[in-house]
Each structure stands twice: as C-alpha cells, then as structure tokens.
Length: 162
Image 1 (cartoon, helix red, strand yellow):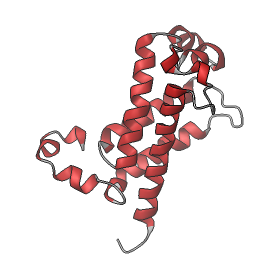
Image 2 (cartoon, helix red, strand yellow):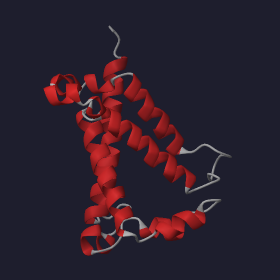
Image 3 (cartoon, one colour):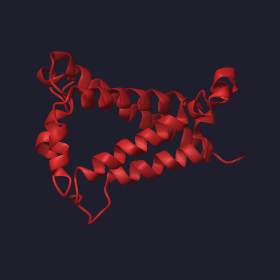
C-alpha cells in the first residue's frame, strides 16, 4: 500500500495502547488523574469497586454491583489494562489484545446503559470498532513489532498469540 493510512493506523494503535497503559498506571499508583494517590491499588484500594459499586446504572446494575470489591475482578481488570495496553503499544499479541480489549469495552458500555449523550452509542462502542479495525487491517505491522513477532517459531505454532 503506497498510502500513509497504514502508518496512521499504526500510530492510532499506539495511542490507544497508551490510553490502556495510562489507565493501568493511574489506578496502580494513583497518579491524580482519575485515581488519587490515596485510592491507588498499591495502597490496598480496589481499582474497580468505586466504579462498580457507585457509577454503574441501567439494566445490569445489580450484576455489576455484585462484582464490586472482588479481588479476582480487580486482578482481571488490571492485568487486562496492562496486557491490552502493552500489546497495542508494541504491536504484539494483537488477536488477544484487540478481542479482549473489545470485550472490556463492551462490558464497560453495558455498565452504563443507556449512555448519557445518545440512546445506545458512546466512546466504548467507538473504541470497540476501532480495535476491530486495527486488528483486521494488521496495523501491528506499521510502527510496531508485529512483523518480527509473527516470524517467531512459537508464535507461528500458536496463532492465537499473533
């Protein structure tokens, strides 16, 4: 392709990965953006309980409230943010990163139904669609390690890890 579009998609992939990584480090360390220092995970505060117990609404509020403060949910969420963020930023593990990132975004969307500014669309749906676009356009091959990663013998054997 002789256009600049693949490089723009590669850059957008990196930026989306950095959004996931920033959320991870903000919740881990309490950098003062979404999470204050005293509410950091390293200080023993659940990174999910505030949102799941207090911010959710709509038809699934009972389900999400029941998950608030559960350690396994905290670990899944934080490992998800870290893994998806690293995968997208580096251009590796794209199948897992994009599909699990899409699942995370759809779950977050369903925790806030109906969305505040539209009957059914919000940024979580846009992120989901964009994750699918970068996966299906193989954006990991531009401004990332995707081509090198795909050549590894172990990755060739285990296609899920591409």
